[in-house]
Length: 170
Image (tube, rainbow, N blue to C red; front, side):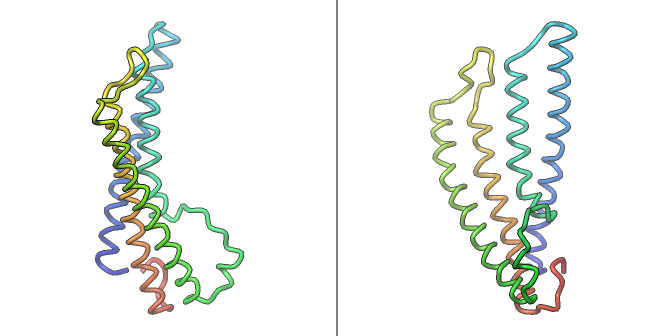
């Protein structure tokens, strides 16, 4: 893997590790909500909304980390029968498509965030969270991160295409 692909992959790993901490925050918020509701009879709409905000951010930021760690689902019926150069070619094409889709979704989501920001969108529920655009802003960031991961994967695939003797992790 070349230096720029390694740097992109490293960035995704670091952000993925940070987003994993959102899981801990989610567990803490859910636990507090459940214990508060059942033991003390108190509840908060804002804390309930915080739960799904944390879940959405963790899932969106975690999708590129999942690819980074090889957690994607691949149908290997034909792929495994291809020679190494053929596998690398499939990886190049699929990664270019991934990059394109990530960039388009990221670009289109910018208007969505801008619209939310311009009206200072908040929760429609009484006691809900204000500034919903902050959650929506995770969309273009997450898809930009997915595009960065695609660049890292493309670098590795191109290296294997040029030199099929190299392993996917080199």
